[in-house]
Length: 149
Image 1 (spheres, rainbow, N blue to C red):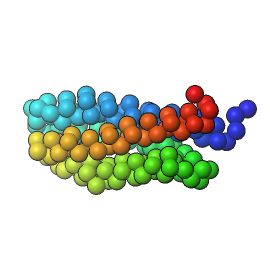
Image 2: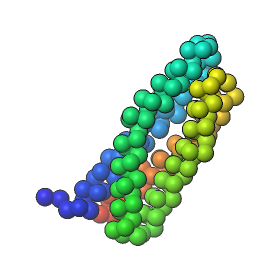
Image 3: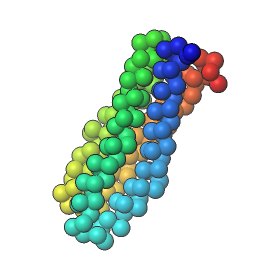
């Protein structure tokens, strides 16, 4: 039976790479379509769609983000290495960007659709896209260094 470190690494890699997939889908497909001219054409309905988007996205990403954060801290506690420290730093960037940029943009879009806010959301989301992609690479590196790949 795998030990605690192996389970932690497996959950961490799974959650991190799941978030990498989600963030790239959001950046390349979802935001440009939903927050582009399509939302503007919907008028008042765009606000209710924005609320639904936030609610349903939370159901998908909250468990992944919680698992990722918990296991990232666990890995760092098991081995305070450059890789685990960089992983936590990249995670802080993901969460910080979410709190400082993406959530406020979504809240504003709930009030009324504004193309400049939608554009800001898409542009600022590159912070998370790059940070989560970096986390994916770090998670893979940690996995390989543990001799699991």
